[in-house]
Length: 338
Length: 214
Image (cartoon, chains in turn blue, brown):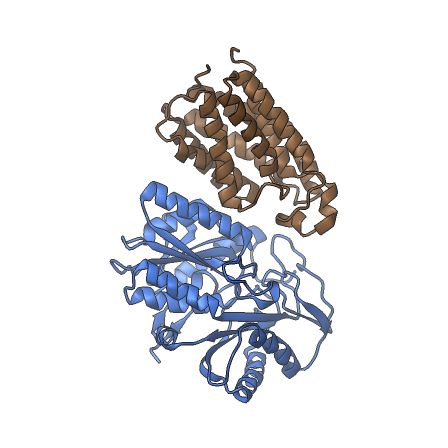
């Protein structure tokens, strides 16, 4: 294991200390618990947006707490859910009477704890809580049947949910409307990932999985969950073709549709390679007559030092365009109105 | 007719803590075949927390006491099974809020609320090789006995037998949840560790009730 850390045990607390020290004007902890984080800026009467999950994915999750996006976040140890009690502490802090919406990824531990936190918030504090669970990873399950349960994991596409729901809340939409927007984004977002190397959880000390120097795995999850195909490394265009094919097949697109594109680095893949990928994405979308409304390239949801990337597409409509284009100002994501 | 108050429930929780402690190695062993082997630790730590919290709780409200105990358990052991058991206790708390004594049908309501709380949190069904397959037969037995006026002592023994049989019946069931679910058909040969926890809880209830008058 080769990492810039002091000790594995102090990895998360020291990372958090650094983040609070760097952004004191934007974020603060709830009481003494560094794992519970809220925006310093609170807008009266606005629906509160909270997320949470394990550490090891920066800028996910806490990086999107700020103006125009989320109001609070609880984080656990590396790849571990925070406790319901921590989620409740954040909920109490960000509620300003209009209720709170939880937006988080589709993982067992997170669901149990967020459900429990929602119940405690309602029963103990009388705070109305709604939840939207993101499951955008095409590789991790069959498409959801109407009324069925989504078995897909939540990955980088949750950024689009934060962005649009955040803008909706910022426009002072009521809880039910913000939830509707968040669900609409979930329904229209699809992601596909590729991994080239493993990450190492500091307290474990060795890579989470073995993968050959000349191999890649299409569809691998952001904690190293098995993907859909492992094979020899192939050129960037072929990787993108395979990934994008899966996404485009999953949600029917027609010529004339508009999308937002997110190319997301998993931690160790340079921006240069991400732009090589986007070049090909842009070609394919162009050939199909799909218009790119806006493009994001960079690290949005990582898996520490894993090499690889994901592609997310959000199918746009007039409402989502307006919300995606709205300004945002958080420690890890800043955007002017466009 | 028995009438249990908050102090009696504190005794029941103490028995549960002791039973989980005694069976720590047994649960670790069962869990190591399907899970990550931490079940023995989370259940002994978790129910010890439940018992301590109930002992420290000042008051006669059984519901509030169960709710606080469940919440403390959720913080102490936020693993899947820890959160599920905590959800059961918190559901009991909501159902019995303001209640200060429980008779035979009251204890049926207690375990029914526990079952419903676990089920709504875990979103599993009976027959899917989980904790529910141990507890559901016990709750059915308690319902039947409460209706026919059987003493709590006997009802608890019947419920413990039903839970044990339910646990044994998980052998042969196909797992659909958790890591065991990932093993497909191979999972049929194994006993479910979650149902073993239900078996132990009802065994503890019978042990506690054996001290009550007929």
